[in-house]
Image (cartoon, rainbow, N blue to C red; front, side, top):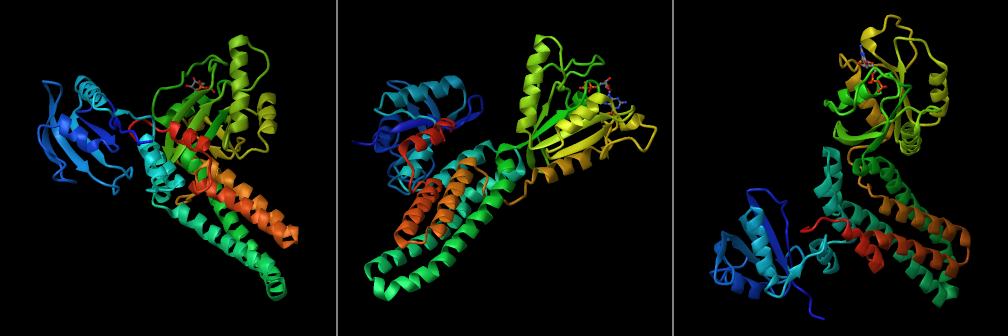
Length: 433
Ligand code: GDP
């Protein structure tokens, strides 16, 4: 079946200029139909054009024709820059729809780039991460992945395993000459492969927060200063600050970044018994937030003594990566008040130190190149298969486990992955990417 030609706006509606991209075999015909001059004769040159409707001029803009396969998608492409007004863009898109092309699905340009061998799957996923990065370190990690750093590490492991497999094949074919040598050398190469996977998995622990954000739950009894701290950290009046206990009814989920690391701050309703129905729902969510948290901030009111409720919360969060904060530092008289760090939402005391400690506790590390849960899972499965292989003893069994490990590694680069997974990954992209 002939590949369909697709089009989509690549810029958000409302800017001064919009970029529309077209990809597929019909690009030369479309250029001939919608521009007032032949831009295919000057490939890769940005040309001024008049964009034509049927008997009308739709807009003046710039357009460029990219022929052949040396393009983003690996297909002929057109890029059209036009005025950004929604009417203009809508009319040009409508016109493109009359030329035999169809609107692109989310991520379809990048999906074609992957299917045409322009990038592997982890690189294609990195495109989305670059677009959606909210913090400096997230962007750096995504760019590393886009540039193939992860792919190269995976390929190096794959090569080791492929060498081991061919050695096994040779030993099975010529048992007298080779079997002993191969059996002797195998454990070492499998171990090396496993060690490299372990190193990557460690980077996964350090990298996942860079992509997903460090999930921080604020917990403490009513009126200890959770909403005030949240506001101080965000620098904005988002949570409702009141003097009535129990007035933060729901979890508030806010995104920010500390030291270039993306952070999600979740203010919980306070985990306590009783209350009305609305408060009960909040309490349920608070428990959920706590179980998901990468870092828990337990707030203790620095102006009073520890209460029974504080003690309950201390016990509840004991096994979590946790920081116990002494709040309302500006009001504290007694320096021996309980807690690890004194903060004041009012004066800002301790807040920079708090941000640093949150990043430290999260384990996030600049430059970690493995950030994506899907990749982490595949590596864990590959590691499992290799561990089984090392224990298997018999060459043909070891070979089966190595193939299994290769299958999981191939899911990361897309060498060995089924269509459904691919569809799911690209469906999360935005249109026009
Ligand atoms: P929450 O119920 O834990 O969310 O507590 P709030 O943030 O609503 O704070 C309860 C009360 O303590 C409010 O009156 C705040 O103004 C006050 N408060 C919170 N943080 C501080 C602080 O750092 N210094 C002082 N002086 N008051 C604070």
